[in-house]
Length: 88
Image 1 (cartoon, rainbow, N blue to C red):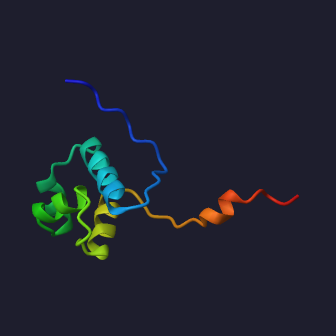
Image 2 (image 1 turned 180 degrees about the horizontal axis):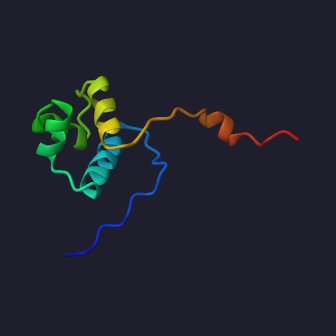
């Protein structure tokens, strides 16, 4: 079995599919099954599966709870500000 590479943070995502993939990657690195994560967040394994597979029907509050339980956070950045050169 090959060793899974460690996820590097921050993780950029621009859609539900990328967010779901990141959640799955971190969940697996934390050694949690979908069932274990669902028990910690009072959700179903179906919900966890839907999030990890990029289903856009997931409730945002529950998705944010998954992120917190996995010891991650969220951060909003102004992408336009990153693209602009800094003024001297």
